[in-house]
Amino acid sequence: MNCPANSAPGKDGGGEAHLAAPSLLKPTPPSKAGTLESMRIARFTVNNELHFGLVEGDAGEETLRVLAGDPFYSGIEPIGTTYPIDQVRLLAPIIPRSKVIGAIANWAGTEAPASPQFFLKPNTTVIGPGDPVTLPEYSEAVSAEGELAVIIGRIAKSVPLERVHEVIFGYTVANDLTARDLLEDRQWTRAKGFDGSTPLGPWIETDLDTDSLNITTWVDGDVVQEGNTSEMHYSVAEQVAAASEIFTLLPGDVLLTGTPAGISVLRDGNEVEVEVEGIGSLVTRVRD
Image (cartoon, rainbow, N blue to C red; front, side, top):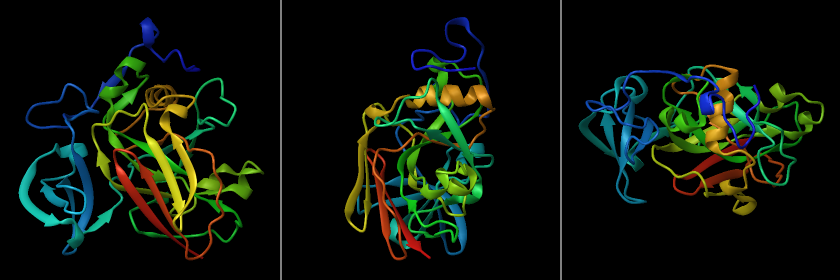
């Protein structure tokens, strides 16, 4: 079913949303799964142990308050232990249990598709902040694509536009690394599915107005992309609704919402930084 910009699956009686999942916030379930109240949630290791934690404090002075378990299934329950952020290793804030969904041609400067269009990436593409990515040997033109990523928080199918906020857990920064020379032959899986091609981080921001956010990408300090989410052909809500018409969304699924114009060819030793306003910055190091 097509989902044009001024409509959504199930809206105005066109269908019924199928939503199911345990409460994301205990003991009192939130009225909106996507707005748990404003908090930042990181995934990290310290002393060889894996944790989720709440990010607290001002920039440069953050601490991580450990959570009792996986917030996608155990709720958000701090246990009191805290660590300075410079004493831990931040990981990708989520490893999708199911899929990474990417938007196609969703930004000003490209021809708007009649409805949101998507591709899929395996979860083996996901890496975390500061992690290196190895360029695939079969490409000579891998580029960075800075994006806003949406994290799904509950099982959902055929979600009406007005209920999309109920299925969003939060947002993070993404870099949809792409072998652009392979796209010319429509080899989307090889172009976007190589190991490490989806850096995510530094954490999940649970409460964010996505209508007008600046997105900037740098390579070795030089700006290669600049844009604002207001330039998207289809909004975050429209994309989530449309994707849920195609397949069931599961907790931890990631939706990449599209990238501003700008092409960079990455080489060994490059450092890529993507910043999304309201979330933070994600750094990826490139190697052959």
